[in-house]
Image (cartoon, rainbow, N blue to C red):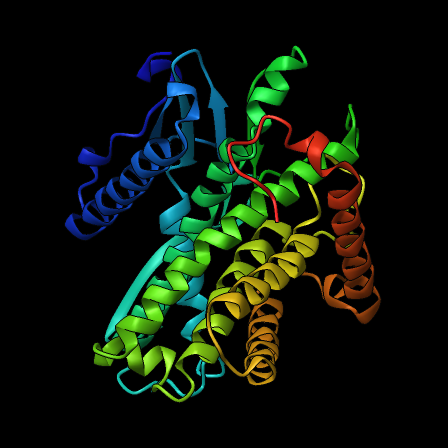
Length: 354
């Protein structure tokens, strides 16, 4: 497949030096991790290429060809998430321990795509924030962008593309795109593969969390956001989960009902079980006050929901107690699928599922 067929996005043509450097850094980091994954797991001697592509939706995808895996991210993903979190954190009610002094030191006017499925539907946003809040929003945006990539790695490691090929289907998965109501195929199995890819993404995200915890010990700016040593683990875990909740909230948008029977789990369902994955994995790796971290997380969710509602980016009906309980129920259903059909969903996996 040629770059023209891919509609590959030319990062070097970005005029803004800072944004161009950000994209180059992201692509280099993802490419380096892809090389590590291929080296460790072999992947049937297939390489992993990572590219940004021009896409009309907020999207990520992965496909398998004869000699390689190809992970594609919409070129809009990093900048949209950066603007999204800048807007959320410019509200002093979000992350209230961060100073709002100097608001306006970081200021820009930009069109923001309000619907993940249609990047042409934009709303003009004036962002006024300060340097420490801009750093915090950049870091949360980076966690969310990284998760999108790590989820695609999850499909590779889970053997899901090889499974599709063996079934005579196109060996490709597309993520984070609003789906039509009418879906075909074994949706339970499809949802289980998404659940598995998210579990890999969550596992790899915990490495980012650990890096931030360690960086906060020596970096004053990181410590200002993620907390001093006595609460840094609890706060960093809660903020990383908050970043993923923000990602899923943006994808879900104004949907007024849960989409429990599509080929992908509903974004709210994903947010809940990904939260559970991260807490479970972190508890295996270090000692921390789970109850304190969960209290912090609930406070962050409440803050974020208030701003999302004020910006008309989510529907109030999407965060009702009834809706959240339905999402939790479906999350538990997917966990039961893993016990019942896990081997079927990952029979070509390069990893073993715990």
